[in-house]
Amino acid sequence: MDLTDLIGPDDVILQLRASCKKNLLSELAEAASQKTGIACRKIFETLLDRERLGSTGIGNGIAIPHGKLPELNGITGLIAVLQDPIEFESIDDKPIDIVFLLLANDEAGAEHLKVLARIARVLREPALASQLREAHSAEAIYALLEKSKTANVA
Image (tube, rainbow, N blue to C red; front, side, top):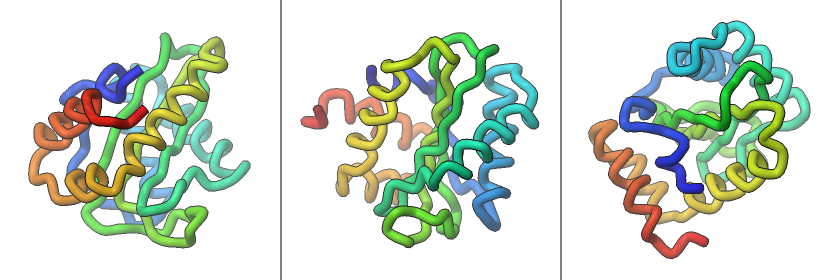
């Protein structure tokens, strides 16, 4: 599954402003609520519960907050590039500025884990991460993700 199978052009948030981790998760939950129709509070609490298990900051300025929601159909996501990096308790203790939110239903099981791994592999490509940070439009970010389908990211 490619990243553009999870998100559409309208699921890209550019120059997102967040003051802290909790604020960022709240902003992402609001956007995900609009996309899925699931209550913002429910999404936010699911993300917070997952973060309590350990940070989803994977290093190199990237975070992949995720959670499972039984009422969701399938797997979906959002990507955001922050206006300014924020502290996220990442594994490398560095602030994050690229966030891919992943939500799945309870039946996603192994597919959910495969998708998480795919997102991590794609976003950890230094050239792509740099291009995402430099992009000036949501359309440009989406085009970069589409291009990553054909890139050598197994």
